[in-house]
Length: 343
Image (cartoon, rainbow, N blue to C red; front, side, top):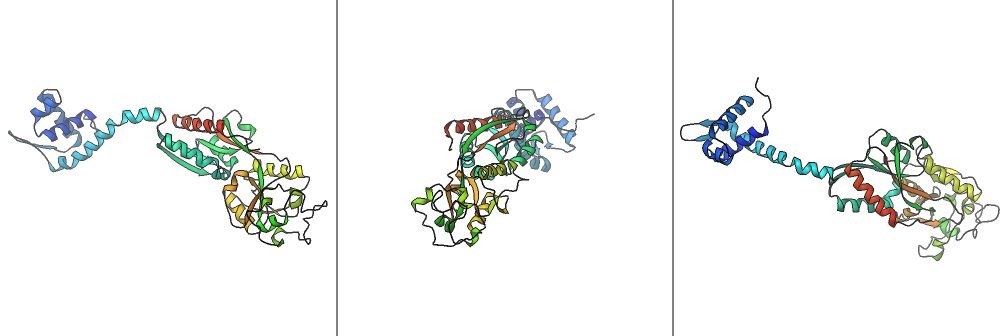
């Protein structure tokens, strides 16, 4: 029974005969005698079911099918010859695919730095990036649908034995507020009364707080503000069902301040949250790195309370570390060693 697929040896013979247009010269190039070469070409033709050469006593010419097939075979052989170096590159983590998910808060500080450094060291690795909340990422990791994720701690305890965690950075939360409100609340406790009011004419909704436009260069923009001064301002926040860890950290901040938040709006994208703040829909507690997201009508103020910090890190399946992922983990470790806690 004839083989249904030609082997690479036969294909090399075909290309050599096609280039030489002579079985004798082709045999010399291949360091073999002519009879086995002729037999191999006939076996190839029988396998393919077509004639590749028109033979005469004086010459050998490609048939129309052979001429059309020649460049395809040459490309196939070139690809086959590249398999060994490709396999070695894959084994060293120099080529391949890395599926990485990240929380939206990583967009404005960590993620660009990591991707730039990884791209410089591993330019042949293709990145598949997905934005998702921490809980979604953990589920995707457990299901084997992504290789790693940049998430906000803590991780669900039920995955403690399955996932590895590499802390990367800790940073405090800051308050994002409209410039109008920032102009009113000019210092920790300075604008509000002991009863929790904001010291204005009794407006309860931050969208109704009016006043002169804040000067972005004003010194008080870096002055801490107390959450107690913002007790009446609606809070814009991630839904707890999508980001319970981050949600609980924010609730803890209000607990430290001794007040209960008044949740006004929920949004699943950090950019949307800041846009709602810009529109006067409320205030938001966001990571300090979000100051890199500049939005007209929004300022970021530090908090006077000793509030919990958020910790962002890399998570992956403990028992599945590909060479490509190992290279990315190395990049993250290098950044973790140089990024000082911002708390």
